[in-house]
Length: 235
Length: 235
DNA sequence: GGAGCGATTTGCTCCGGCGCAAATATGCTG
DNA sequence: CAGCATATTTGCGCCGGAGCAAATCGCTCC
Image 1 (tube, protein in one colour):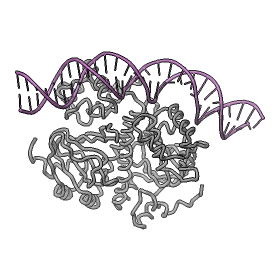
Image 2 (image 1 turned 135 degrees about the vertical axis):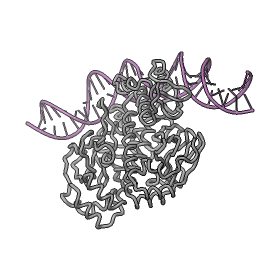
Image 3 (image 1 turned 30 degrees about the vertical axis):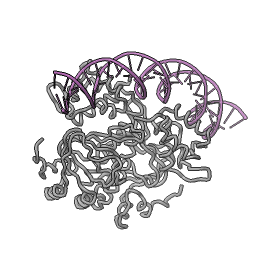
Image 4 (image 1 turned 90 degrees about the vertical axis):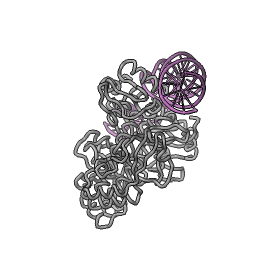
């Protein structure tokens, strides 16, 4: 991983949170950010932690997962470079509603509530960007709710895979490769099923040549076929 | 229903969207709102409609439901007096992601995208309020996702009932009454189960005296007991 | 009061997929 | 390279709850 190549205002300018901001504002954003490097599998924050900050991934991937009192968990989403996380809790509980764990070695920036509020008052565009981001995630959450309530496990896994491809897909000769390591358990927790069921489904698809996994890296070889499964009412 | 009693700046000042705004700004808000009365069961907008506006309920209740391509649907939430709806799509698709139907005769205000943006630029507090509102809904959606993925139908119905009581509960001598008519199908679509299963569960609870329904109006008589069911890992 | 319609209840069957358990594969560590 | 830990695969039994069907209830409108 490059050491400091990303710690420039230019990088912050490219983040979804700071879209359409004048250069002067970007300078302030960059200046007030606290940047940290976190190791693979390290926790950035835990569900229930107080003293929340707004975070953004500079490089790497973070898994956001919510755990129930019974230990069962759901992966809320994966956060890639340029995306923000943990920001919603600033405006609600002042407690993180989920865990954040780095899937790979990750470089992460964050701002305190006071800093972000100050930035937003000075630049309403930031607030509008936040609304845009959270809004998209809310729509996605509602779609997933509908899927969970009405579709079978196979279709949900298909949707999960497609969503991952859209969010973190990298085109290769072999197909679309998900840019970060993905355990079967992760896929299960995204799709809302069990490790066992997810394993069965994915293995079947591997046998059929729809996708491939090598060292926890998943490549979608026939997106169209998986899309067919996702839409197929017969399951 | 009172005819025009609510069409005053005072009412808008009490809405979650316009919290902490100076009186002058409230005047502008009130002036630019388009107010409409909609009949029981009438649709305010349909999933996929373009030309979106931001809406707020002045009086009445609106059901927001998302329908899948197969016809199955999930109730995203019920919108009561003072709450906003349809606002998220302004910042994302410019298409409504769900249907909005009035459950009872309802008075509803709305603003165009341009109007709301202008208000937000002038008053960043409005944008912050929007973030607060959407953030809370996102958290709720994520909780429901976890429930749908990990809990059985009984617990989900219990959570749904408790959530409704919290949002729209009115204390009566008999217990907490949900302020709007609620069909079994509605409960099923909130909890993510079928009409039949929801009916069985609710009827069993009625027999046990945990709740009562009279003319589609649900009263929670023993919230603590329902909360116990909601948390009970045995189901 | 009767007809008609939607909502609700309830019985029954069937199956997807969860839970348990064990075998196997794969990657790390020393 | 051996040994261990973690991840994955796979078999099997069982059950929650979806799906179908039918009866009953309760309104509303003649």
